[in-house]
Every structure is written in C-alpha cells, then in structure tokens.
Image 1 (tube, rainbow, N blue to C red):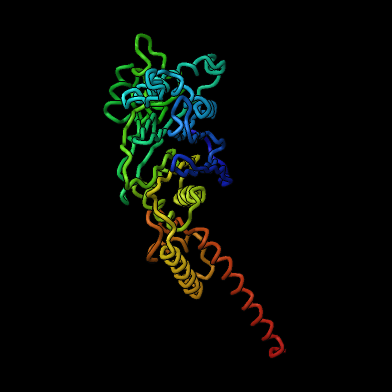
Image 2 (image 1 turned 120 degrees about the vertical axis):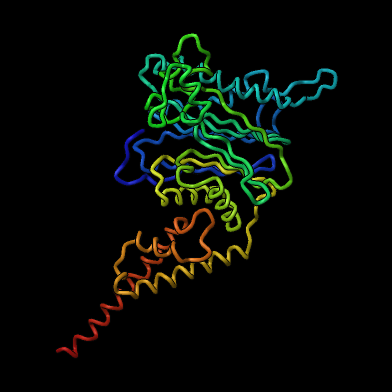
Amino acid sequence: MGAFLDKPKTEKHNEGGMGNSLRFGLSSMQGWRVEMEDAHTAVIGLPCGLKDWSFFAVFDGHAGAKVSAYCAEQLLDQIIANEDFRGKLDVKEGTEVQPSLEDVNRGIKTGFLNLDERMRDIPEMKSGEDKSGSTAVCAIVSPSHIFFANCGDSRAVFSRGGKCQFSTQDHKPINPTEKERIQKAGGSVMIQRVNGSLAVSRALGDFEYKNVKGMGPCEQLVSPEPEIFLEKRCSDEEFLVLACDGIWDVMTNDDVCDFVRDRMKLTNSLESICNQVIDTCLNKGSRDNMSIVIVAFKSAPAVSEEAIKKEEELDARLRDKIKEILENPDFSEADLPTFMHILGEGTPGLPPGGGISAKKSTVESILNELRPKKQDDEEEEDESAVPEQL
C-alpha cells in the first residue's frame, strides 16, 4: 500500500534519554515511501504513582498518517486514564500500592479499545474522508515486569543472556485465529489480505473494516484488541527493541538482536545503533518507512576495546580486498553493488545480523578514496611520458 519515491529520503529523526535505570534511543526515516506514516512515543516515569515505570511505543500508519500520530499522542493517556491501570493509595498506610499484573493487563486492553472508540469521533474519520489506520507495539517497563502489547505487525523482541528470548506475534490475516474471526464477520482473506486489501488483521483506526452490526469491537474484520505478553525482569536482561515492519521485512528477530548486541560493544550511543539498523535495512532492500526504539537495561553489553579492535581489523581487511579487486582490470570500473556482492561472499568478521549491508558506507568511502588516487597516478604517468614521445 502506498507509492514510492525515485530515491529514498534518508534524513533521520533521533531521540534518546535515560532514567529508571534504563537508556533508550530511537530513530525514524521516511525511506522510499512518498509519506512518513510512522510515529513513536518514549516516556520515562509515568504519573498516577508510577514514577518508576516507563512507556515506549512504535506506530506504523497506513493509508495516511493521522491515526498513527493520534495514537502516539493519546495511547498512553488512555491507558493511564482508566482505573484498572492506576496505582492505588493504601488509606491506612498512606502509601501507594502498585497495580496487580491483572490490573495492568486489563488497563492496557481498555486503553487500546477506548482510544479506538474515541478516534471514531474525529471529524475526518466520522465522515469517512480519512480511512487511515495504524499498528501499535508498546512496552511498559515496571520495576519487576515488562508488559508487551501488540496490535498488528509491528514487533517487539527482548534479548537476555546473549540471545533473543522473546518476540511478539504479528497479526496477519492468514493466521488461523485471525482468519476465523474475519470470516465470522463476513469478510474474506484474499492474497493474504483482509478482503484482498489490508495486510494486517488487527489495527487502530481502519473504521471501514469495523462496521459489522451485532458484533463487538474485537469481533470485527479488523480488531483493535492488543495481544499482551508478560516478561519478568531478570539479572541477565540486555535490551528490548520495538520496530515497524520496515525493519522486520528484511531482518529476522535474531538478526536484529545479534546486530544490536554487537554494535553495543562499539558505541554507547543507542541513537547511533538505531541509525545503523535503519541504514542496514535500507541497504538490504527495505522499501517502507522505518522506525525503531532500543531500550537498554543495566546488563546490556558495554563498549569493549577488543570489539573496537576487531572492527578496525575488519575495515582494514575490506580496504585490502577492495584494493586487490581494483587491481583486476575486469573489475577496476565495477559499480558499488558488484563490490558489495564480492565482499559479502568472502569477508570474515562481518557484523552478525547485518553482514556486508552494515558496511556499505565504509565500502563506499574506501572506493571513493582509492579510485581517484588511482586515476591521479595514471594522469601523472601520462604527463611524465609526454616529453619522451616528443
């Protein structure tokens, strides 16, 4: 869904922050799409007695950016606004009591459903002028647990103990339970889409798919109900990643976790790592908007002198190999994709999960440096040969 530009818009929006023993970084980029429809939220410290809690979310809009932008502004407020979610005051002790796990789950679900219902009253939505919708994936980090809520095909992953240990599940129309609901509501799944059109089976907005009379909001062709997952905080937790499908289209869960973990050994800047993930996905062929949030815990990998040295050695190997390739007359004028292909086939130590796609800017920089020098040397040789010819 959506048209493409002649060349991608690669300017990025970055944010970062820290608090509650967490660090976060985020990045978003329009890419090849004619419009930027993604949005995001990052909040350290929540109101209503939940100052030790934090909220992060990514929203991937489609058919317009209105719903994703509204969700980014309002979803957290709608979750917090209902009594199920709020911390409560112990009247006898005069202290705040944290909500139970069940209260939080109910509060998140109520927040999603209330937000969706409120958006129906937006004039453009009510008139049918705006038909946009948005996926939503969020993480609420409490001192003891992480609550993941997913609606659509944006995705969250959680890395601990050096591995990707958890991911949310994408809501696609071909999933058996999703397909069953769609068909019960009188719809169909064609070319893996709802009624042959929408590629996700759960989303906020998309009200043209939510008008089946006699059925509740969670029984419609497209449901606004989030699927909620709970992970207990632990000593070996490293980081979590929230990202839209522009990332997951070209990198697997393990790819992203392995790449982020590896880059954390080279830089403390989570914004820089987010940018590197997006650039790598662009190089791997992603044509969608891209947004990513990385949240790092205390046990996240630290910058390592050994890792920095290995990266320097990798760059030196790439330089030597490019120089060797340029000396071959058959490849001296080869284009960048050719070099990327050759280097990707036989270069040890490439970034895990990213491969040669993660080193495209390095390869391009080395090529730009070596090729002009080669041409200058040839010109000097030609000039020195002129007097002899005369």
